[in-house]
Image 1 (tube, rainbow, N blue to C red):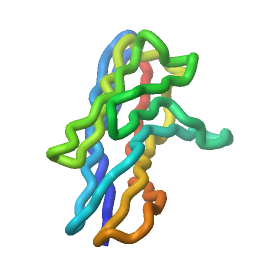
Image 2 (image 1 turned 45 degrees about the vertical axis):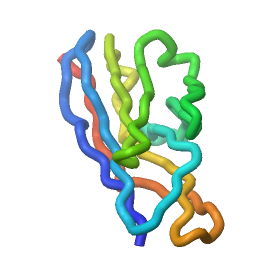
Image 3 (image 1 turned 135 degrees about the vertical axis):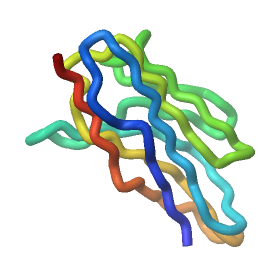
Length: 120
């Protein structure tokens, strides 16, 4: 059974930094794209950043130049380094990954979410 386990959220002051991690667990998994989404109260879940298995990245305009997504394929882990955080970055952040297990087709998986609060 595949699971995505996130860590690294918390409370930070404006201008501060946080690093989120998301590790995929399960036997015989292959992972294509990985990404981070966020959902603020009363709003839809939106893409923050994504990274392909080859390392190509894509960012929402609102986080370009402040956030960096990366991955460690050996550890099946994706990271989101968030710098110069703003109050409007406050949201629940969700990890997402396209995962194949035991050679079957790729399926979309979500983490449980981690709260990021930017406030003084």
